[in-house]
Length: 428
Image (cartoon, rainbow, N blue to C red; front, side, top):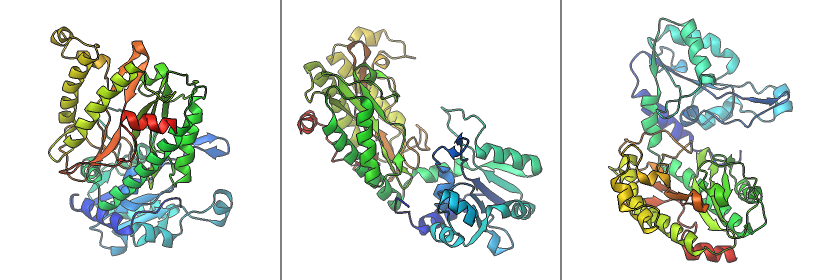
């Protein structure tokens, strides 16, 4: 295993907290993600279902977790089903967890092989009235029903139509949103690796190279330091492409006079880092680049202290949107008349700042949590203002990850951000 797993006690407490929220005579069922084939003899990299990870720590395919706390048989109140690590499978695919290893990782006492699941499921379903299932829930994203979770839910409802099925997400998402001390350690480690990756990549940037060469530097340093992978497809965008928010081709040559925007993050122990830095390719900001960068930096530095208990993403946005109007006027990109005459449904600043300032971070880089949820200590969010002037080919975004506290904690304090720091690093 590349990373130090979280303690079994962490997962025991998570299951205990969840059971405290469900109705009596209930069963919780979770399944792992699917292995997706890439071609006839290989699969795409596997990424575990975050909900199953949060409750068990089991990071492999063909896994089920069943929680039946009111079952008459104590051995059936928590059951983990794992893939049978047969000698034949080990020869082809390498190590898979034994029952003992799964017990030690998860803290679940009863571990069975997945082929036993259908028969045990029949017993569990006969002893409960309510069944809690998870389907991904995000009001801004409609998931296509092709995941293993959807197929599993559909199959259960067809085979056991008389049960009362309930949503697990409203119970589990608030728990996932508030990070434990162990989770914060894992996130800090992911952010430390992310910082190291930036420092390496920045020193490799020079005119004439290609964006993918810089991506390779990021990747090398992350993997070298124990990251499992990128926490999302990295953005390495030069020149006009700095104004494309989710540019991931990373195939252009970077030129003298360009800015290079890098939005990237390391994944460690399944927890995500997320950072953005924008740097001058030739090591020196032009006067106009510096002017725009300084406006974004001012907003960035003023916003981090706002990540306190009682705030919301909406309140963070309100502050940033007001400041954005002020800075865009200083930059000559908006006038007072533009703001007075703007369409409230699409404010004038949206031409140059189209996205929100923050999202929750955890097991997923865009983690569970809503924009109107009140911040609680231990929540972790991004802070990422930006200005994108397409007509000038200048896009600037600066981002870090912040722990909500009375004095908010920047998880990447050693990643250079000041103009002088960036230019000094580029010279090196």
